[in-house]
Image 1: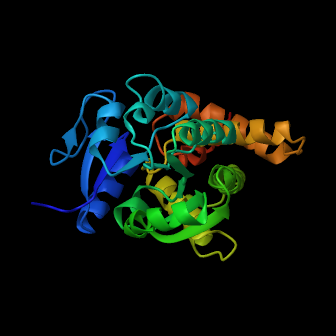
Image 2 (image 1 turned 60 degrees about the vertical axis):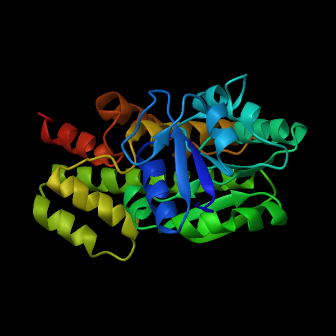
Length: 291
């Protein structure tokens, strides 16, 4: 009889399924819930509701796209919280608003369930290779309980502070990431419009120290015209929207982030499910078709 701890996944998309694969390699078992009742891993059992997953699993890991999906899967008679035992551990890896993270923490406390907000930094390549960076908010005790899971899916865990801190740090990081991509896209658009050779331009940027490895990967994707979703535009635009709202609540002026959000809204209209680096392709298309 197996003594492996079971991780119960709420949401089993591109990121969660890769986390599950690495957790299995580390000796964990996995069950999952998705609204469709299925996922991309035929070796994982899919249960009928989040509550059923929570009743079956030793630790629940949530990986859903937004506040609305988090609310739908956590609350109510079929929600995960309804199935969690007193003393249970819920790891929320979703990128959601600080308010949604806090609401889940408050609901967990009422049921004596430990909730750690722990969104991850990294896209599908990092999830594949267990090189994610976990951005966690929670108590020292809860961090210690979650450590074996974090170690299996990532190369580094940053304890950002008390509960809610992980969600806030994720917005900082993704805001900078989005703004950096927009600067790259605008620079490329100018270079192409000014007549620079396309291949030379993309190759030159790949050799510049001022451009991050992450954005160099996006430049290579754009050079090939391959915007296969490592981080879909709809999710990046959502994170930028959450950041703008969070900043407005604190009266923090972020005009650059606001402009980037508009560019990503345009890209979402054009290519919602493509990688967010499709912004480079959108601007290239504009300048290429400029009369």
